[in-house]
Image (cartoon, rainbow over all chains, first blue to last red; front, side, top):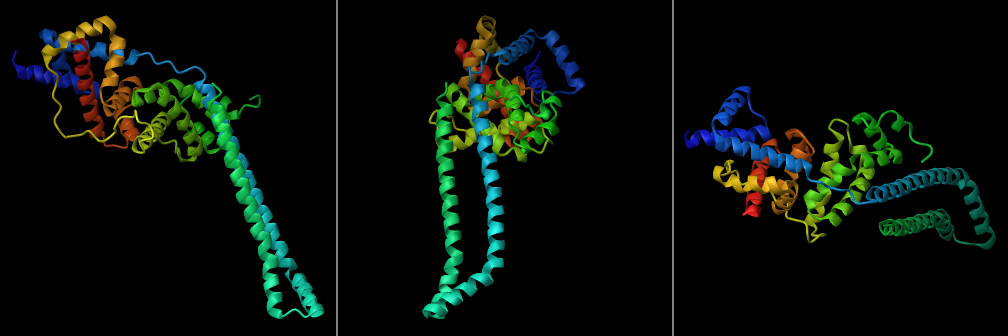
Length: 166
Length: 199
C-alpha cells in the first residue's frame, strides 16, 4: 500500500471530523481502514482523543452562578430605576416648560411693574427676565448631574460588595 | 423571586429563541436568572479553555452576563442563543486582551498562513495511543492548554459544544474557511502536544 493512499486516508479522516465527507469517500475510507492497520490505529486514536476531549471535566466554581445572578439583578434594577427617573425628568421638564410659557405674560407684567416702581432700565429688566428662566434650568441640570454621580458611586460600591460576597 | 415571570412557564428551558429574545428585550431578571443557570457549564467551560485561567474565566463569566443584560435588545433570535452568547464572551476576552488588562491572556492574532493541511505522521501515533490509554482526560486537558487559544477555542466549540461550522464562524466573525483551517490545525496541534507530552 503506497504512501499516497495513507495520506488520502488521513486527509479524509480529518475531513470527516471537521466538515464531513461524501458517501463514496466514506466507503473508500472504511475499506482502507479495514485493510490498513496503521490508519485504523490512527482512526481509533483520533476517536479516543475526541472522546477524551468531550469528557474533560470542568466544574463551575461554587457560588459563581449565584454571584452572577445577583450582579445581573442589581444592574437590571439600576437600569430600571435610571429609566424611570429619566422618564420622570422628561415629564417634569415638559410640565415646567408649559407652565413657563403660559405664565410668561404675567411674569413680564410683574417685571414691568417692578421697573416702573423703582426706575430700573429696560435692559436690566430684560436680563432679569432671562435669568428668571435660566436659573431654574441650571439648577435642574446640576441636580441631574449630582444624582448621576451618586448613582454611579452607589453602583460601584454594590459591585465591589457583590464581588467580595464569596 | 416569588412572582416569577410568566415567560418561565412558557418553557424557557427549551431552545425557544423568540422567548429568550423577548425576555432579553424586557431585561427580565427572571429570564436572565434562568439563562445563567442553563448555560453556566457551557459558558464557563468555553471561557476556561479560551483564557486558560480559572480566575479570568470567572470574571469574564460575570461580565458576559452583564453585557447580555445591557445589549439584550441586539439579540435578533435568528441565530442560536448560544452562538450569540459565545460571541459576546469572546469579544470581551479579546477586548481585554487588546487592552492588556490581563497579562496572562494569550495573543489572539490571526494565525492563518494559508498553508495546506498536512496530516500528522502515521508513525508518531504510537506514543499518543499509549498516553490516551493511560490518562486520557487529564492528558487532553493539559495538552489543550499547551496549544494556542485560537485553536483551543474552535476545538471546544466544535467537539465540546457541538456547534456547526457556520455557527462557529458566527462566533468568531470569520469565514468558514478560516474555521475549517483552524480546526484542522488545532486537531494536529492537539495530537502533537499529546505526543510531545507522552515522549
